[in-house]
Image (cartoon, rainbow, N blue to C red):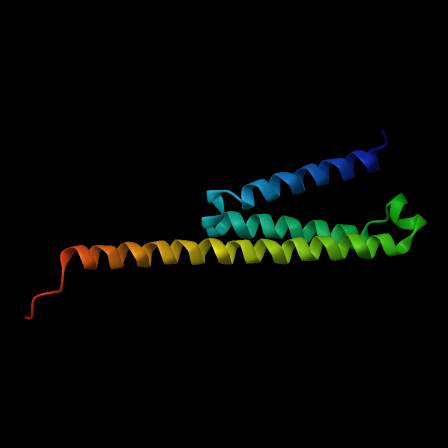
Amino acid sequence: MDLKLAAVAFVASLLLINQLILRSALVARGWVFYLLQGFHLAVILAAALVPLPAFEVVPAIRWVVVLALVLRMAYNWRLRALWFEREQRAAFEAEMEAARRDGPAAPP
């Protein structure tokens, strides 16, 4: 296995680990999400700029890969937004349940 192929396999495995972390509870921590998105952006830039043999054979492959990575990054942002929306909805429902259980507040 040559060095470029090993590097591509390593980056692909890191992207898979990235996706697993983004689907876990760690995404609620802002710095984890932004660190992973920064890594994802670095991979996108590398795919666009680093010459790889597969990209040299058919140049359109490079832009298909870059587009797929950009779409994956946008999907990660959507997952994070859904995560926070779900957390806010759960907090609101818990607050409403507590208010229903306690009854109306007494006038001052």
